[in-house]
Image 1 (cartoon, one colour):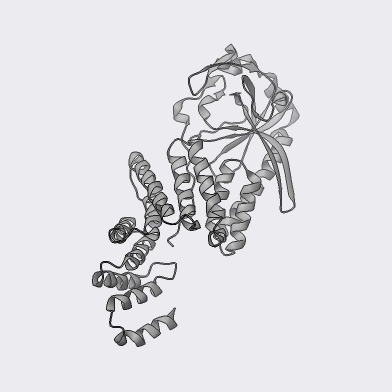
Image 2 (cartoon, one colour):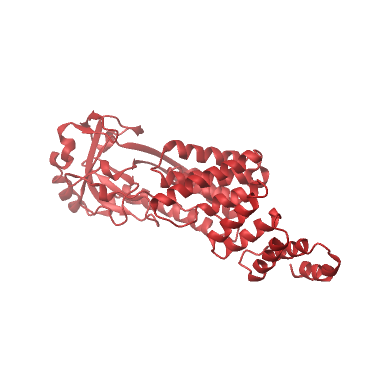
Amino acid sequence: MRETLNKLDEMKDSIKNKAEYFLLRGRTLNVVGKFSSEALETLSKAVKLDPKSVEAWNHLGECYWKNGDMAGAKNCFNGALSHSKNKVSLRNLSMVMRQLEGNPEERQSLIKESVERAKDAVQLDLADGTSWLILGNAYLSLFFSGGQNPRVLKQCMSAYTRAERDPVTLGNPDLHFNRAMSYKFQEEYQLALEGFHRAALLDPGWKEAEAEEKALLNYLDNVVTLSAAKGKLKPKKLDRMLSTLTHRDLGPYGSGSYTSPSGVSIDLQHISISELEPEINSNKVIVGRVVCSVDTNTTVPFTFCLCDQKSCIPVTVYNLIQGGGFKIGDSVAIPEPFVQVVHVDHMGKTYDFHSVRVDSPLVLVVNGNKLKANKQSFSVLAVSVVPE
């Protein structure tokens, strides 16, 4: 960088277009990942001398972004778009919109606008994988901020698939990391681990990708070990806990029916954990006692092991308020449990087990009582976002 700057200084007097000179110098200074006040000052001069320079506006916006001034960055990208509709400004604007602060309603509106700007960028060049990646990230943010609509998550994953068709984006560690985070949320652990591993290989200095891979392997180790050992409880204590498990622990589900989240009345039959089948167990309800919780290294999901007189199974609960987990000995009833079949073979480690996934804690009955709305808090997933 210093060599380039020295050459530009030598050519300064011969470059008649001073706006072009300041743009070249500012762009060079802006190459580093950290904020440069000199780059900001230089690019500001370029914009002042040539207000129609889209490239200068975009680089200046990146400077403001690096300095944490999202409002300033937004103004710059809008300034560029006022002169020319271009994909770089649109996708940078999409990313900045998701980082602007506001109340929940304002944040939702900003994220929706972020999706629209990313869509605009994609339409300008359908083959540009970077634009598809940013659209995927925008959809992922919308999914978590807007009630977790499965259709939005499907759009997110489709955008990531389109992104990897571009050989340039295929080598972008952000694509593999962000998609791995969404796979992890969907409990597609094999694909998540492969994504984290690929991201770490593409950027060996990026410790977060390697840390996520290790943390997920450690989580799977704990799930398998603790569920097989029934929480490592002493046999007498476990027997005593299970002996007090009765029909009353089904709570309102003991009547043989319940009202689904969509308001439909559904008949229920109590079955044991060992009778569960893969995927949705319609018209069935299970009940057991919590024998342990599993450390996830994050707050999402809350994972615990549930035992009845015959079996033990890990349960993952999403959108549970932080600190709202259950303690050892609590009884938990789950209507129409969804059973995930997990198979993972990664880096010499193999995991095969079934687990129950609960997307809303509000369907659970704990110690005979239905959980209330204050126990729910929609999950938030962080994605990797950096200026281009």
